[in-house]
Amino acid sequence: VFAKVFSQEALASYLPKIQQVIQDSLRVWGSNPEPINVYRESQRLSFTMAVRVLLGFHVSEEEMRHLFSTFQGKDYSDALDVLMDSAQENGTELSMQELKLIFAAFATTASASTSLIMQLLRHPGVLERLREELRSHGLLQNGRLLPEGQLRLDSITNLKYLDCVVKEVLRLFTPVSGGYRTAMQTFELDAFDPDRFSSERGEDREGRFHYLPFGGGVRSCLGKQLATLFLRILAIELAGTGRFELATRDFPRVVTVPVVHPVDGLRVKFYGLDSNQNEIIMAKSEQLLGATV
Image (cartoon, rainbow, N blue to C red):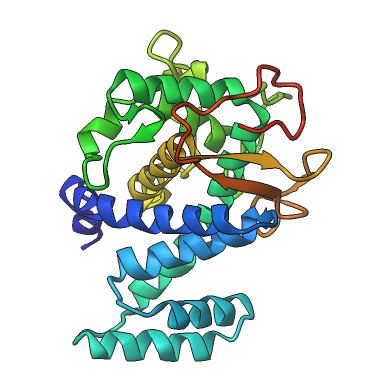
């Protein structure tokens, strides 16, 4: 069953729905005059994606806010009632496996999304390289992404630097931080460097279990292809539809329990792309904290 849920054909059908959910969220973030809590809003975003894309439920914005708040408040019985009622209205039944999908996507995808945004803020040069790649593939023109509906799975797959960035974020900030393995020797995690996953270096190909952001073997995450697609689309939208800046003096400390996340949630001010702006101007120094990117 899950092989079909996460097949290439299924992912292609999810793509426009995921993009729409992300675009709607970024519009809301950009319209907020105050900085947002990225981790909390990423939870809301990933929850919406799970309900609307994975489960295919058509719930109103008010019902979605109610669902999210009850999940956040751990009042799961109330939230499940709403989900089950929605399923019945759509002529289906909610299975335990589908519920597990919600919980899995809700926490870990929010963690990875927050880490992605934080690393793009820390490394504006990486964000600019993403924009250059989008331009070179014709996906970003005059500071604008292609019209809605024209982003395809094969065009995303061809974005090699984007793939490197997502892999590097997951290497340093794997959402589930416990690997439950014994290190055979002392080691340190290297600095953020997406090029380690380039075709020239290919450090993820050095060993079968050298790179395990989604676990390995029979315990590997079933939804890893969907999660990766979600992060790629989020990165594309962030690079092409606006600008954002750190709203605090310093980057927050990151904790690992229950999943990897910043202690303050990461306070960021998002701006919508100005209608007269043809190109997004980035700060030249990666050392400038709070630089608009």
